Image (cartoon, rainbow, N blue to C red; front, side, top):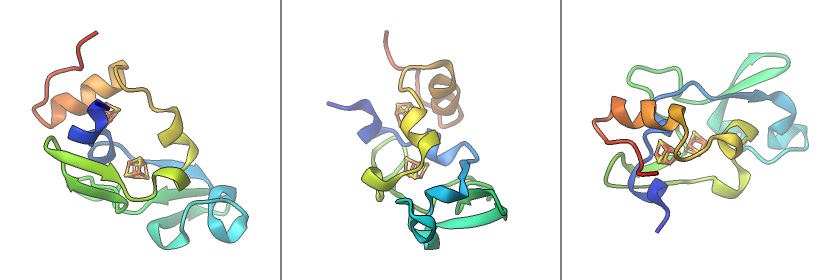
Length: 102
Ligand code: SF4
Ligand code: SF4
């Protein structure tokens, strides 16, 4: 079972900025309504600079059951984020979750 489906900590810990050309309106896949513009070249997943952090696309309860509501259309930083990485462990720690086992 994919451990991320019981986690979601990274989606509720990190600011998620991505290239504006990843927006649907610019020929990409990310729904515009789930993003905010940072500048002409950069967008941010809505909610990822709020306190507490929570990406607007995240569904479910962190640490219990979660999934990305735009999994197939999520931006590059989300594709690149690695489960089991040090950043993953830090995000999990913020939510009181132990690091993934090796
Ligand atoms: S913090 Fe790690 S385990 Fe949790 S959802 Fe993100 S990548 Fe998956
Ligand atoms: S777009 Fe999906 S994978 Fe990326 S931060 Fe938001 S909920 Fe997480």
